[in-house]
Image (cartoon, rainbow, N blue to C red; front, top):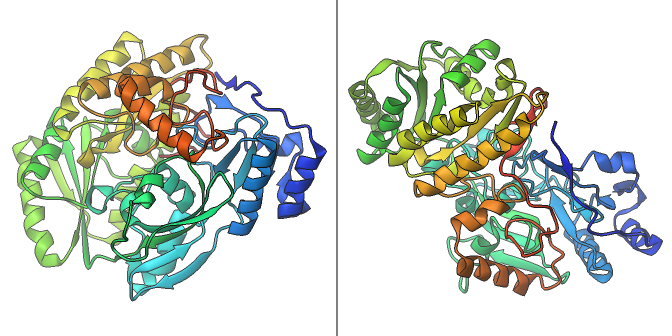
Length: 492
């Protein structure tokens, strides 16, 4: 597998530095052994790996504050890490830096059902919050496919999405307030637990900044009432373009499903071999569509979606009749990435967003790009909001094929930009897309981003080398995408 080690940008040999970190968190909660450090050398982006000088596991805002101050004193970069499920290299350690891992800061601090709020630490696993609140009539709406493992702090850093973000919005729409430790070691409280707060929207400013502004230590998030009724449908098509047009037509008709997920024939093949979700193997594409709300409001939308699907040459249309059947349909979508191992040894996961009206055009262009590199691209994505996840299938055992897959991925991202889209819908930029940032933005725009970051982090110690391209990046020029070896468990 093609993996390039990032250069050792920082060397920390001071015993005093390590001792101060140890004093801050306790000897049991700092790792400096080379073998232990290897455990944290990357996130879901496996192209680049870096070995930190230390991994620290704080338990409170105060301990995080101390860590930040120590790193500032010694001018050592620091990187925050949740569960390591990110797919853009945002939590990849800068060699020699310090990795702050939030495994211990995993408590639900307060549940306020009257005001529909939850106060949590950043290491709380996304799905755990919904499991805690579901019996009380609420859930946490943003649902990345990695929600069984990913953390809410990491979701905030990347502004993560998910299947149901079509109706309910991205992570930023569900975070009301944050406590953060700034690069100076100061603790700041951003936002409020109400619908609005006076002054600048610093909360929204920090969400999605990928740890380059501050370290999040606490969040107040919005809880969403459980829907009274849910209807899940599977529409099957003989042409991918017909499925894409169905997506655009449904939204244009004024309907906003909770979710609209598209899977192509390669994905169907993999899923049915591994999961047996009940997708027809002869379909070129399937749309998994979910409606939720009052039964009286769902019925007319269900009829509308069926009519639009049939108008676009839908070959079959099925509605889940039981909760077990519904869960089976969703299991196929959730397990799709892990199933690709039956059709290719490796895959290269990308993330770009295009206007819904351009879906069919862009997917055709993906096929042409893949053919030009003698590779295959499979697609499984959030069709309702145009958030694509093309996966380049390849064999990393064949000399030169990984490099060819990487270049193929770069062309795929450029195709998204040409179609009027953006580099990322939910994975973030991290290391993986820094090269393409200059394709997306002009120099004045990039300069503004850099000036804002430098104003907040004048020493450049907060997750350097990520998100914003510099003249001299601390990481080598990165390739776009995340490479995963099959069986490795990386999911989106």
